[in-house]
Image (tube, rainbow, N blue to C red; front, side, top):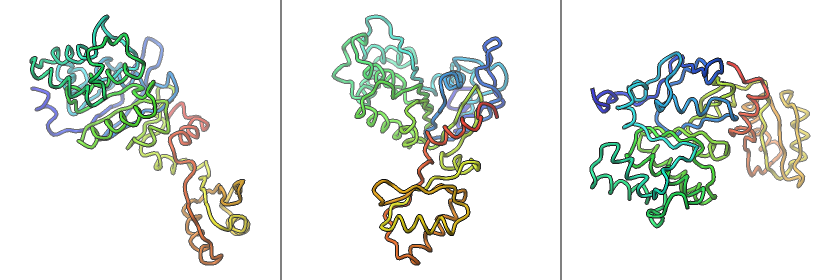
Length: 322
C-alpha cells in the first residue's frame, strides 16, 4: 500500500504509550498524544525529551515501547514516511564543498524526482527562504542564519504534509525570523502539521496553535497556552488594568474582593497589576465598577498566560513527572 492510500483518511499524528530508553537512560516515557494539523510548539529545557520526540516522529528512532502513526503510516514504515515528512535538524551536517542548490537538488533526486521536477522544486524552496542569490555559493561559507534557511528549504522542498523543525529560529536575525515564521504559518494554513521546538518562547507563543510542555522525558501539559494556564489552580492569575483612576480602583478592589491575593500600582499610577484566584469574577466586578466609579478603562490584559509564564509555573510546581 502506498503512502497516499495509507494516509488518505487520516490527518493525525498519534503517540500511543510511547517510551524510549537509551540503555538505562530515559529519553521519553509513556507519551500519549494526538496532534491535529497546525503549528505545535515543543517547549522544555535541554534534556527534556524534545529532540527524542522529534526523532521518534520522523522514524529516525524506534520506540522501546508503544506505537507511533504519522497520518496513518506507522513510524517504522520509513519508505512511505519519508515522503510525508520534512525534517530540519538542529545540527549542521552538510557534505563538504556542496552548494545550497546542490544540497536541496540532491535530496530531491534521492526522493525520486526527475531532473526537471527536482530543479523546479529546488528554486521554489530557495525562493521561499530568500536564498536564490546565494544558491551557487558553498554552504560552508554561509552565515549561521543562511545555514538555518537552507536546511529549512531542503525540508520543505518536496511539500511534506508534516514538517518537523528542531530549533529552526536559532541564529536568525529578527527580520529573517519573521519571514520564516510566516512560512510556517502558511504551511499550517494548508492543513499540514508544523512541529517546532524552540527556546525562543515568546515566538512559540505567537505562532503555535498548541504547545506541549516537556520535562524529564514526560509530557507535563499540553493544549492551548490559555487553556493550560487556566488549569493551574494553585497560581493566582495576574491581570493588568490600565485606567484613569488606578489608585481608587486598587483601594475598592482590596476592600471588596476576597479572592485577590495582591495588587500593585504601576509606577506611573496609570494602572495596576491584580493577582486573583478568580479571574472571571474579577472581570465581572470590573464591569460593575466602570459604572459605579465612572471609570475610563483603557486595557485589561492577562499578564501570565504566555508560554514562558505557564512553563515557569509548571516547573516550579514539580512538573518533572506526570
